Length: 75
Length: 204
Image (cartoon, rainbow over all chains, first blue to last red; front, side, top):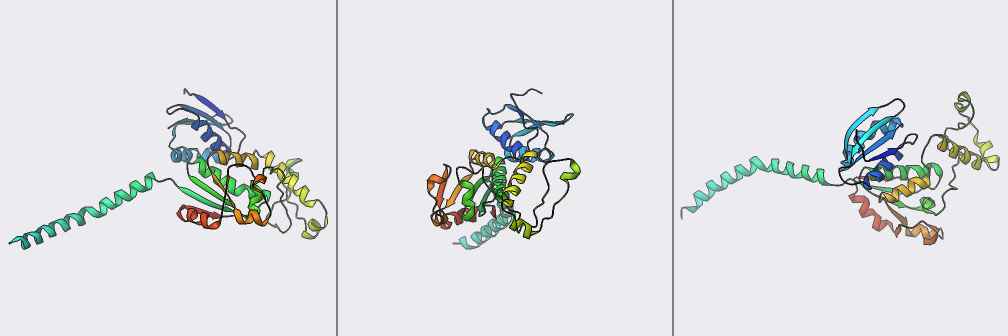
């Protein structure tokens, strides 16, 4: 999937993945896509809720070899 | 003339109509209001040790990441968390029976041992607290958990409001220059109305 910015938060623990994602999204323009790479299982489980609560649509999520990836569209 | 019975009939019809749609409209209006309002959280932070520094900043920053309005009121030892240099926050195992004492180094079987050190020894050995603090800091680093400095600055970036209790600032002879910038100084009378309107109020 196409994305405008990539954020690698692998190895970081909740709540850092969300805080960094929020910071990255705020700096982006509406409609742009953020690609996030996460390893922390706690954050992975909550990414859907994070997307829903903040209104940034979760376009796609996938489990890769050693991490998870999420595509968020900036609202 | 002849108006009264017609008005009575009209009245009856109007009342019927209102009864039929009123609860529906109220329900709709309430739902709309719920959807549009921003959740809010108020935290009162009263402790200044390393283990108690995490709860206010983690909860505050996470709520802010979710788009909530967050205010943290720092009072008593919580003021410790607002100092410019917080790299020296300590944690004490003394009288803290809930604290797991596991070594953050060595082979896995070694790391798994929970060392139950009696209070008498903890209190008797000078420097024990420093050792415990260092081990805790190492454990935190090993697990990729954010430092307090980082959580604090991310909280401020996410617009979490920091309020220092004016009374305890004076009580412990702090000066505003001792603290980081971006802190408001106020009292309980100012903070309580904020807490009243908040959806979640926490004392830690």
